[in-house]
Image (tube, rainbow over the protein chains, first blue to last red):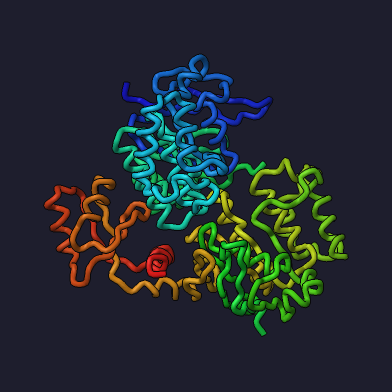
Length: 244
Length: 302
């Protein structure tokens, strides 16, 4: 089983509105896959279906082999999720957050202890392990949130605009963590508004009005659209998107 | 006379020093950018300048009015678009605009000329509730509401955060057109690539200013030799370059890595090192630093 995500004509309608329109693509295990699109292009709806949170109207999708209609609970066990908006409990400490998420995913007492120590050491958070998350700088929170999203060793992790608002060095440190996780075999499914980050992905898809308009490596996309940056590709594809 | 003068302004929240002895001035008609990540102090500075917050120390004037003593007079002279959407979600597009016009004792008709170009895009939806607009449309409406009383200085706090690359570009084009009308604007953004659209910028980090200059001036603050390096396996390339004896810093920058090296290192040295580690399709080229390179270099020395 070498595909983390397989979709076939995956579609979601809300009344007359087709939010996600017959998208077909797959993502290899260990791949860093960039999922781009303008605001309102249908990315969030697609991600919610892939996470087993929203039933598709038609089409198929499998996440690590599990069916998005019937096996949503299994899907939740094999995925991790992190977004800029919600990830950690601010009024729990660093250690409590790790134990909370680990506990939810059913880690036993020994594993929880080992995992907590490992994350705290890796992120160099020893001095703040018993401090409330609310008191940490944003960049630290984001790196902790990413580690927590990986606490149950998921096959695939969904990152929804993970790097918003952080300084340029912290943003790159975050991508170092993404590369390391991918190198260990975790599939990364990431959305971003930073076009330089699109370059860091193995392959990138660009959604426009509910459809996938392009899907290729960053260099392949730049070649096809005759431009020297991912921003250029994005501007060509996403301009003229309806702004309803 | 400068449109905005900030003189040694500080503001703390408890033990957090949000803004620390910041000084800068903005000329009339200038498009000035505050560039920095969350926690840089941008929003606190905005709130002080639009009279919503009193500085602990220092003083500031906007169009000659003191932000503390003349706050009442100043409020009708400035337009403010806060970072968080702050219109009335259950009023329609037109009701919101009319509300803000009325509060400032004017009408949509009186200053329609200033907002026309932006508002025509909203007019098809003028009876829609503001809460039901798309992100890009909300942003345009917020800009119209901040402009409707014809302010002399416009303050825009992170107007493009979380907005896609196409809408961001459109928004900056709108600001360029406002600039042609001699409006003074102070804009904050965490996106370094937007800095080039400003006349001058201040780079900010944890309450302090790292540099103030034109965008190209900031680029030239970066004095070390800088190389863009690329090879077939990016992750292995980063790891190997960071271990190299000649490397000072190595960061990903889009499709290339940006590398600064010890004095006396040549591209041939870098090339040899990478070939010894069997990297393929290696490209090494000297480049001029961008604003983001400068920002990162200043952060490390600050």
